[in-house]
Image 1 (cartoon, rainbow, N blue to C red):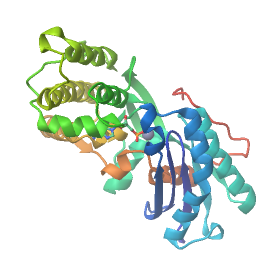
Image 2 (image 1 turned 90 degrees about the vertical axis):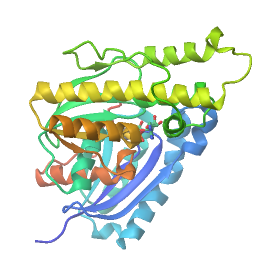
Image 3 (image 1 turned 90 degrees about the horizontal axis):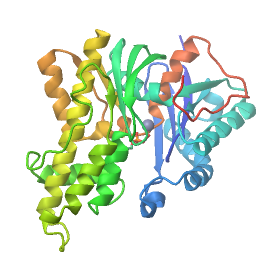
Length: 340
Ligand code: KG4
Ligand code: ZN
């Protein structure tokens, strides 16, 4: 049988990405244009700037993915695009581009759920059947646990009631005067600090039985620690203090993520955990989940860094829909919110 080739487009937040993948989950071409430099001075993603940058970059990014694959649009079998969830303006650019390419080529259009794609990245990276599994998605916009009976069969188990974990990393990074995005910078500082020097709260962790996260109070606790008068705060934070705060914060977040993942596995009765999203790039989280998996005897899948943060390769989940004959009409809509 012949190989199917799909172009996949991802523009849900602030990365403009495209890939060419096969139904054997091979990557023939993959491009990610990051917008970090554009949002840096605002300390967070500015939706309007993100949309405009997507408009400028989307076609060059698609061209480069095809060039890497040594293919043209005529060699493809379908075009897939993430249409949920995400920033509405960002989603619209990717979806409009995918539709235009479908009109121009006559190729079928496939919709991708960005969160399901993050979990599917575990299957792509490992080459193993990871379903059924519990999915933990931790990024700048999401911190959710899912019961995943199949690639596109997700049931929400719980999530954050306020900030996402990545958002907390980013805000704490800003409070500590570290560069944007805070996640990698806080993690780097934490590696130099003593994670037992300062004990921050673990919100909801002891609320046994409840699959929920809360990172807003933890963020506030960090702010109080930075501002506390007994810390002789006339001078700026010393590097050692800053590193200890980063390490204590990181440890608190990781404790919550690991503890609730273990609980979700017990409640679902599954023995496989798949992790996705930018925060899954965090070294301490990977290490602690590894220890947990060994202790409790579950299978753990965390993709390499490039497949944890937003990318189009994970859009290869569209192969599942292709096989099921699930194609979209050209009035495909975007769905910014989490529901469904
Ligand atoms: O999945 P992603 O690329 O974009 C979405 O939010 O959808 O995730 C980005 C988030 C940011 O909040 C960033 O600070 C965080 O992932 N992040 C990290 C690390 N690398 C990225 N957080 C903690 N440790 C890291 N090493
Ligand atoms: Zn994402």
